[in-house]
Length: 103
Image (cartoon, rainbow, N blue to C red; front, side, top):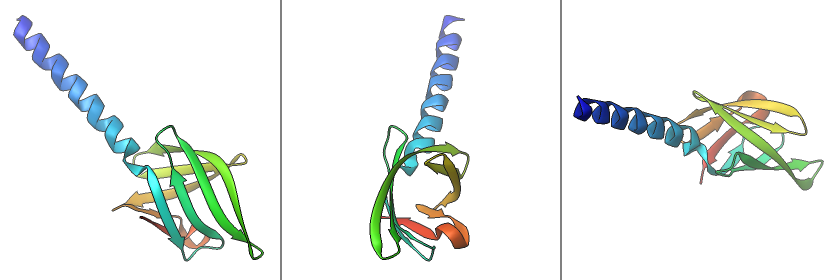
C-alpha cells in the first residue's frame, strides 16, 4: 500500500512540474514585426516583461508583467493587458501586436 501511495505522489509531482515548465516555456526574447509599433518583447522567468517599441520614430521601452493561461500569453504594461496567442515559439498579437518570434 505504501508503494502505491509513493507512486501516485510521484506522478502528481511530475505532472505539476510539467505544467509549470510548459507555462514558463514562453520566457525569452522575441523579435516583432507586422504590428503597429512593437520591435521586441522580453519575458523573464519571474513574470516580468520588457516591451520595446517604435513610437513616432523614437525607440521606447516599458516594463510590465505577463501571465500564461493555456496558449494565451497576456502582457500587461501600464495597466493595459494585451493578449498574444503562443504557438511554435511565436507570440501572435494580430494586426495590432504583430508576430513576435523567439530569437
